[in-house]
Length: 97
Ligand SMILES: [Zn+2]
Image 1: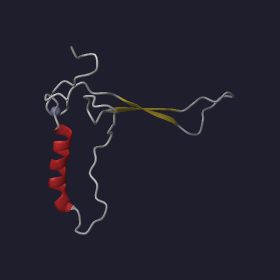
Image 2: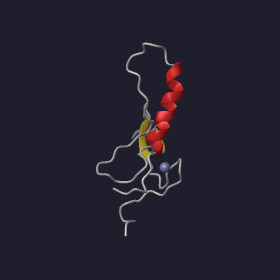
Image 3: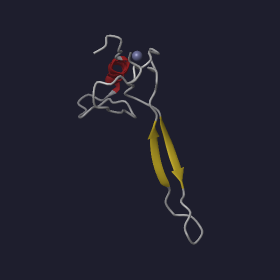
């Protein structure tokens, strides 16, 4: 909707493809290039498609003492405010005048 949006992430992904594709063995099947930690938002909201994540990890205490065998893990996605490539500020809901 706005012409101030950038396509940095898709453009860089294309560049990576061009550079790395010759290293992939000929005849390879189901070749795929995707950003890690991608997020998808409904609506045409202006946001970074790739964002940092924080991993939370801990061992739960047991009622009778000691700790659980398995680790409890969770991941929290952080939304970037600026494009990592061009430094453009994302136009978030509420910023619009
Ligand atoms: Zn950008």
